[in-house]
Amino acid sequence: MTDGAQDMGGVKGFGPVKPEPNEPVFHGEWERRAFALTLAMGKPGGWNIDMSRSARENRPNDEYLSMSYYQIWLAGLETLMKERNLVSDDEIEAQHSLHPPKSLPVLSSDDVVKTLHRGGPTERTPRAPAQFKAGDRVRMKTINPPTHTRLPRYVRGHIGIVERVIGCHVFPDSNAIGKGEDPQWLYTVVFDGRELWGAEAETGTTVSVDAWEPYMEKAR
Amino acid sequence: MPGHDHDHPHDHDHSELSETQLRVRALETVLTEKGYVDPAALDLLIETYEKKVGPRNGARVVAKAWADPVYRARLLKDGTPAIAAVGYAGRQGEHIVVLENTPKLHNMVVCTLCSCYPWPVLGLPPVWYKSAPYRSRAVADPRGVLADFGVTLPKDTEIRIWDSTAEIRYLVLPMRPEGTDGWSEEKLAELVTRDSMIGTGLPKAPKDLK
Image (tube, rainbow over the protein chains, first blue to last red):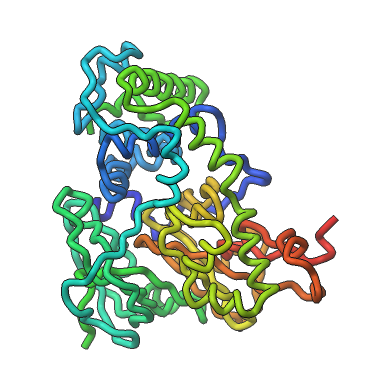
């Protein structure tokens, strides 16, 4: 969701970072289960990572900001499952399956290690040459799609330098809404801190994002 | 936004927490009854990220790079295969780029949009990495964020923030501490902290080891 609460870069007022000494991997059993259910349901659910991110962030700002991270994961998982009629509210309420299951592939314990090891590489064969090269000055477009994007608002409209042509990668803006992978060239674009934050920026600070070609235009 | 009114905590008191706990339990029961999840797979997923995959993996990679200049060059040139050669690969580490800290340049990694983090080498991210304060301030006030971690860098050190907006995952290669000549990789790995591989911390000094 463009400009949603998840798009936090540069937003003021969240206070100091509070690292937790000797933090455990999970804070309580329900986090373990929420994490594992989310990973395991990827196979029968058939959604992709961009759909998952979109489902997590696509909620009212006050809700997003008041939930813990695994609560957000859980809510995203419920959204994805309900969209596909895999589970319904009456079943959650009853704490039992009330409707016949669909026939779906399942992540078995035998498959866990190799599934994790395989992961989900996003590099694809390019269909066209890259439009930009290292050293090019580019401006991030001002775009406001109503759906998922990975162009953070704090760089929109700003000029940066292409530092690296990463390769051709799955385009989340398309993949998140079921319109296919539509692979696009991906670049590391670096910005001077003053370009983003003005004279108040700390000197000697640069910030980079990884940006897909449709987010960028040549800077004059 | 169907189905979330129940789970809309404006504060985090115990009843809200137990509501979430009940919800997770109900979901797990329903999904297991439907045959959509294999309970043994759930246990193995949890065990993997709680016991096997964590920052000790990344520390081994860093220590190897400190000890072996040929490996270091390979790691910086193409992180993913060099890290796979040590045995770490896969989910949320499909495309890893390693960032070298120097006296002139300090790298720090964030994901302003969610919580992207190099799982195979660092495990799952800590709460602060996923929190609004870190995600909002890292890109605009990096020295302030470093101060929250008790880290002060020299004034003339340039700071580079890497916002993980795509599927590229970043691992910081911190500077090898002084006074460690001739150390084994195993001993060097003890100096490598999780935060030093994110860029919010520095490695331990030899005197910090007990």
